[in-house]
Amino acid sequence: MQVATGKSILNGIAIGPLRIYKKAETQTTVTSTLTPEEEYARFDAARVKAQEQLGVLYEKALEEVGEDNASIFEIHQMMLDDDDYLDAVKGIIDTQNATAEYAVSTTGENFSAAFAAMEDEYMRARAADVKDISHRVVNVLLGVGDEEMMADQPAILVADDLTPSETVQLDKTKLLGFITRHGSSNSHTAILARTMNIPALVGVDFQDDWDGKLAVLDGYNHCVYIDPAQELLVAMEEKRSNDLKQEALLQSLKKKPNVTLDGREIKVYANIGNAGDVGLVLQNDAQGIGLFRSEFIYLDSQDYPSEDQQFMLYKRVVETMAGKKVIIRTLDIGADKQASYFELDKEENPALGYRAIRICLTRKEVFKTQLRAILRASAFGTVSVMFPMIISVREVRDAKEIMEECKAELQERGVAFGNVEIGIMIETPAAVLLADELAEEVEFFSLGTNDLTQYTLAIDRQNPKLDNFYDSHHPAVLRMIKHTIEAGHRHGCWVGICGELGADQTLTETFLRMGVDELSVSPAAVLPLRKIIRSLDLSLDLNKETQV
Ligand code: PEP
Ligand code: MG
Image (cartoon, rainbow, N blue to C red; front, side, top):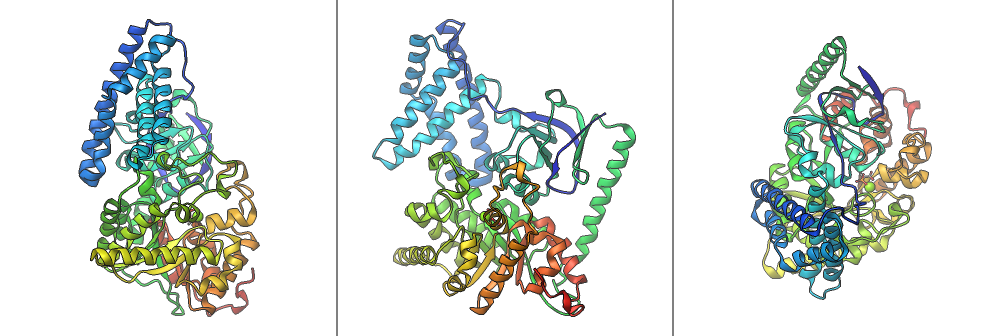
């Protein structure tokens, strides 16, 4: 038996075989030792394999997200038959005695640059597609690819790192847990693991020979046991079955109100990353959705999702929630959340860069497409919208103005929409300091404590080396929260917390005493939080009045 340690993302236990996922090396050998004919034959076989993969993806997408969304995989299949593309690959192989992988990745880069420079918007959008298909063929040539990420059998996935877009595409029915070498416990990948209620460890120095071995991932003790001894395995299986029993016990809190012993009621909502998570929200009896991270729809897509595609997804969530509030956060892309078709430049300081509302206000058509989709979905239930990364009153006014333009466009088209409550995320120190003015503009605030902590403490939430400095209980952060709640209330705004801190049970009483109106947490954290809330008596020990 071997033991390795890391940082736990979720207290839980996963038992199963390890599956090591290796990403394709982007560094490819340039000069071939084979003849050009042999290299071209390698390319052609990889191309056919890639087309087969795309066929499987098409069928899966057709079933899960409908024909419109699935059609991109058909387009990709066709691109791999394109004569110009095939001639270019062959030309590089022939003239430079190059390897197939070098020829394909160079062709991908060249075609992508050519498409990106075109006038026509449709053609420009193909720039990302040609890169994507080339990447797929290179993966096949190097013997790594999509199918390697997914085990046939349920497994604990092991990888150097997982990006949010990779995580969101994982087949959750086969994912018992995951382990990464890199990654911080405050990253979006970590948040997704919590949303999916999947035990995960980051910062584990794994070895290649672990592949296929039986392991126990012990999230409570921040470690993984490889080839566990029989006694340990039995003990861990028992612990896991106790966890399941505890979860079942929590189910008895379903349909009970979130009210303290002295009668203070608070809303407990859930955070979701995509429409598929709504089942977890119902299962855990959240009163609403406090944060729908809509950017994951974009990350799960090969191209800009259309108004209709987004509308269908939002409508599905809103209808399923049957009148309960659904707060959709507008696109918060950029920084660690990258979709290639946005073609965002590489930045020195991505967390301080071109992201979220900054992209939406400058790429107005992308923003408007999303806002119209949200507005249309609001005709089917109770929808609120909130804007991320706000730092000024100007931004909120601009966003609201664009929202009005969208309403006018829908009216002109004769399309129905409902009353949409407007709020903002408070996740920058600037927004906290301007909370009084901002509250005059909107109906609610939602505190994004993940970013608020990052920007208040000047600590990159992506940097694992800083995890020990990322003190979410830092008095500066708690004072920011208190200030925001008080300012919001002064101007008639309700105030919630949707960052990870909202689920921190050691702070629940503090937040309630501060007067927070809503806590939005990962679905699995809803019932444990209800249990805590129902055990608190805020009338006791008034000296405990939030001293932060
Ligand atoms: C936050 O910053 O707290 C938040 C909820 O947004 P995200 O984690 O998606 O940046
Ligand atoms: Mg944020």
